[in-house]
Length: 386
Image (tube, rainbow, N blue to C red; front, side):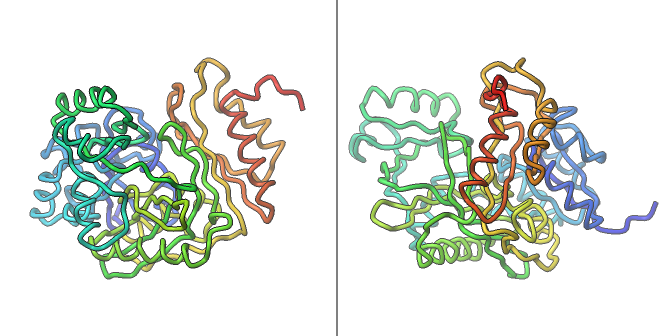
């Protein structure tokens, strides 16, 4: 069968790669996946996949052979391997020069500081004395490898520093100290950027984090000052351009109590705070990521409805309480406009196994619908009578 479009390699078999498959099918784009294990989330829906270790260069060469470009479900591929692929003529998107800023928080902070982008006060710390000199209380973060609250500690005393430095010593990573920010809420500004420099900015959204995990997103962020929203979008567009990002860039932000925005984290891939766009935007973050990495014209990021609310479905405290599929009859009958996205993942307490999107003109109605559905799938409402 002749190939009708260039093949795109995707490294990582999680739900982000899985959700790239749907717009790829619409666009007729073949995907080739490197999965970390048989049967993982994306491998269930992308037939052309290899199982292997993303840390092995020869495995990366095998999965990218003959592909037009390679992109990522996560930021953990070793930087030196990305350079090797690039040197071999593979279009790595985002490239290693950009991606290192999402891989290493110390590199990111140094570069953003040089660009004058507002960030929390920060410093790399080598020992407890350096933390004391920085000032307690503060936040300690591993410079590499952390996600969903892992590798992040709120330290208020010298004794609290023991665990972060133990982890740093065992993993060989550095620690970054950051000030405790007095913030009103957390925001996210997502943009897409193509190699030719075309860019598109999604509405700035408000996010709710619990234990370091994104639980809820409201698009657009309610009651956000238009000038601050513009500042956030302009900051994200500037960062994408200055760092040479290709694909989706998510800029997680603090809206401070005194009315400023500070950059918290960067992610150079589709992001949890952009899942609302699957049903709430004209072009989802997943489709625009594919368009960008293949240098196709970008689609409109404009919202379809006034409000969209995304709530994550997390594994409940008892994995045996119901199967996720068993939640469909209630959720679909109660709310025919609800959109449910499940990831094909084994239930574990606190694990992201899906999300729901609710959209409409009434924010409170959207919040109630999305929260109820997510709780029902989780099993929290299993004994509730309607």
